[in-house]
Image 1 (cartoon, rainbow, N blue to C red):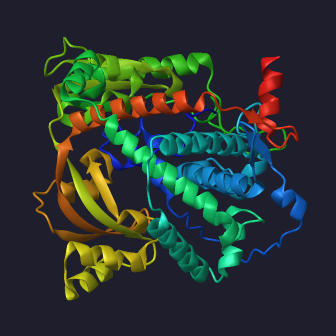
Image 2 (cartoon, one colour):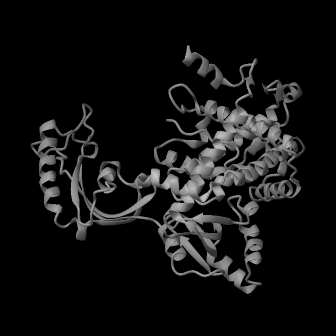
Image 3 (cartoon, rainbow, N blue to C red):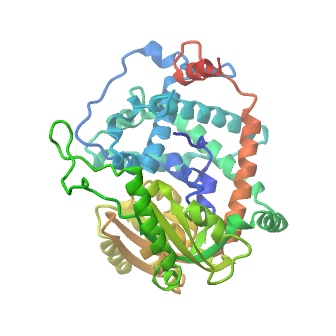
Length: 482
């Protein structure tokens, strides 16, 4: 299992327009990292007092000779862990992983999740210190007071909601040594670095000619296609040839394993059905619209994005991994000129969004009052960002929200949407249209590439020293290289 290492400075990317949502997932979770992480605790977890003053003030490791405290490390470890769980926890649970014990489980062949989160935490600390040094050298000034106070207010509210004192909440969220006083400088440094990151990001926004040139050189990555697809599954036998149910040595029923000959026979029949479906797939297949190449099944992607394609072209491909055939009909290819959208969204799991909307309508019913109302219902740390979501392609949200966004909205429109199958309530305030999908995607891609290169450059001179061996991932890396 591997993924791009997350930096502490992806906030601006998250708030910029992004069409290739799946491809840019890890860049879009920064506001979860920089916002207060609201944890929903199951049961009571005891508060552990400080156990060892020496451990508290002795550097946990060093960056260019500057000691990093256990408090700073634990804070960054918690952010790395919780952002990962926010992004992947649902899927991990679907695959049977107990995320409550994720630290002790294997991330890959060499690292546990604890090692992986430690690596991300250490790298984020390096990036923070490099960014702070750059900001100070540039004479950058930024008052973190308001943001810090809001974060503490949010944490106090979260602690109360979970029947914890603030002290208990901080230790549960950020480690045994965490107190408001000890975390203050760490949090303020993080906020200062993030503010400079945002300022630098603006400098890296590409010029229009660079956007056009990138599109022309990578047209397949930014064009969209409309198509129809039908799946023809092979009818594999599920019982023994005599019709009996297979059992194991202990007499328990087990799944039947078809022979190679049985699979070949079933696939031959599916192929014949797929060939016949070529004539009907355009009318009977499932319709897909505005699909990017990154979101299309790889087995049919090259066919659909072939420059020679014309409306009505059809084909079928064998999917041996899933014992089936995919039948597709090409409808159209185009550069997606649809606008992205800006909105404010109050998202809850406990309060009916219609209640929130009704309360808003009974008040001043302004954009400002919507933000103020959201402060009462914030469950996902978006208060710091005034519940703002910018540059949202319709395809990046649930189709029920997408239909509302694309439904001829005007500034100030408000609605309540309940995604009952997902367990979420959305109170939405429409701001207006933003950049086109393709243009916004390229702008974000180029700016992000430039920003990542800048981060790598300024962090390159920084080295980590770990004489106590607290960062086990470094030992693993050294042994792997040997």
